[in-house]
Structure formats: C-alpha cells, structure tokens
Image (spheres, rainbow, N blue to C red):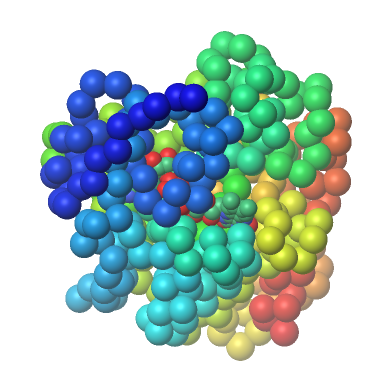
Length: 327
Ligand SMILES: Cc1cc2nc3c(=O)[nH]c(=O)nc-3n(C[C@H](O)[C@H](O)[C@H](O)COP(=O)(O)OP(=O)(O)OC[C@H]3O[C@@H](n4cnc5c(N)ncnc54)[C@H](O)[C@@H]3O)c2cc1C
Ligand code: SF4
C-alpha cells in the first residue's frame, strides 16, 4: 500500500503553501477524478491538500455583466443556479448531460476544469502512455481507439479526448480562469487553459506549479441569444460524449448575426470552431448552410483505426444542434 499525507487548508494561501512543501502534492476537491486515479495507482500523491473548507463557493454577478463562479461550487449548484439558467442555458444543459446526480453533487467547478482523460491505457496503469509515463509511447495509437479518442488536435504522442462537457459550454461562452499561486494572482483565458498534447502530452493545462484555481468568470452573455448543448453517446445517460456541441446564436429574423460553436468528445481539448462560426454569421438559418457549417467545424480532422465515425458524427452534432436551436 502507498501512503500519503493529508492536509486540510483553511485559506488559499495556506493551501498553496501546503502544496509547495516537498513531494508530489495534489489539491483535493470533490475527489471524483482524483480518488479514482489514486486507487488505480495512476496518480501517486505524497500529499493531498484538501481545499473543501475554502470559501470559494459563491456564484456572483459582476457589475460588467460577467458572472464569477467559485472553484468549489458544485456542478449541481452551478447547473441549477438562477443566473445560469436565465443567461447561460447551454452551461446548465452541458453540466446536466455529464456523469450522474451523485457525482455532480460532489464534483466542483475547478475539479471539472482539471479532470483527467478517460483513455483506458492511461487508466490501466501499465500500458505505454506518454501522459502517465513521458516517453513510454502511446498504446492508443494502433490500439483500441474508438470512443474516448480524438480526431482533432491530436499528435503522434497522444490522441485522448478531453472528457468534460462543462468545459465545452465554457469554451463557447468565453471565460477567464483566475489562479492564485506562490507569485500572486493571475487570469488565464479559458481558451488557453487546456493545452494540446503536441510533443508534451503530460502537460495538460496552463497552471504553474502549486497554483490553485480560485474562480472561473464567464463572459457577459450575448444579448438576445439562444443556446443549446447536444451530446451524442453510446448510452443515453452516465456516459462520456462521442461527440457534443455547444452552440450560441443571435438572430435577426431568419439571419444569424452572431455565433459561437464549440465541440466536445472529438478533440484533445474543448474545441472552439472559429472557422465554422465565421461561415455561419450573416447567413440565413437554412439546412444547407448548417450542413456546410458542420463540415467546417470538423475541418482538419484525422481519424484513427476505430474512430473514423467521429468525423461525420461531429458534423452531425453541430448541424442538428443548429437546426433545432433555430427552428
Ligand atoms: C463514472 C464517472 C462518469 C463521469 N462522467 C462525466 C461526463 O459524462 N461528463 C463530464 O464532464 N465529466 C464526467 N465525469 C468527470 C467528473 O465531472 C469529474 O470527475 C469532476 O468534475 C471532477 O471534479 P472534482 O471536484 O471531483 O475534482 P477532484 O477529483 O477533486 O480533482 C480533479 C483534479 O483537479 C485538481 N483540482 C481540483 N480542484 C482544483 C483547484 N481548485 N485548483 C487546482 N487544481 C484542482 C485535483 O488536484 C485533481 O488533479 C465523470 C466521472 C466519473 C467518475
Ligand atoms: S492517447 Fe494519450 S492518454 Fe491514451 S495512451 Fe496515448 S498518450 Fe496515453
């Protein structure tokens, strides 16, 4: 059995200084990713710094129209908060499409942003995996790579999808991640927070050592917008996405004047489809336009042995979401 220390922090400063002591530390929030991976011996902490007693549990409107979410707000609280339901329906829908009620009650906003990949070779603890064991190779390329492996943003070193639903909606909405560390507080644009695997798949996010996520601040909602999250999966509940889309549009009559499109389940990070957005703005809401926009969203996709079906599925999940949303 592997032993580790446990420390309970009462303030962000205390959490950061506990985290900065020698050894391999991890912050413990809801534990729904971390404790699983510790039990599987994939994450091997010397110390868990429990952050559940920090006062980071508020959802607050800001004077400039943005909404600030504490890192410890649970997924359930966030999805059901009146501000989120009124102005960010896509976020509520995305969260409710993920995991199960019990998991969402425990899972936190910061933990969801930081959740690890669901690749079976990463989680088995023994296969070659560049994420778990840098330089050991990638068992998924040439192995079984159907459901939790990507067709966008992959590299020859890792092809695992980013698993979060919540982060896909945040990518479409636009957000800032506030982090506090030994060198103070800084803001990271949400689109820069998750890293592509490239040559260094073990680097998954833009946090510096010992930094703690304290808040995620959503951009002000687009006026008069409508939005929806559509998730396609093998089973209709309690299952990760094969392909998903978060879509926000503003319409003037039948014409689309603003659009945000993000994809999940098909890419190695929450994927903003900027080309597809540009192609949609100024167009009439029309089936042919949506088909073209779906194709644009998957531009540059590269399939592996078992996941070629994700390219048409990714196109469909955008096309169908747009069609239903504008109907
Ligand atoms: C069976 C199952 C099914 C699931 N299905 C889905 C799904 O369909 N869709 C989906 O999106 N998700 C799904 N999830 C994942 C779930 O959403 C995440 O496990 C959860 O959001 C993680 O949050 P947590 O608070 O429990 O994080 P923890 O497990 O506590 O932490 C996760 C990681 O984040 C780090 N961390 C936590 N908080 C902070 C912080 N404030 N600052 C810095 N680092 C931090 C931890 O050190 C750890 O490395 C599923 C999980 C399970 C177990
Ligand atoms: S896809 Fe990524 S996580 Fe999976 S085995 Fe390859 S390197 Fe590891």
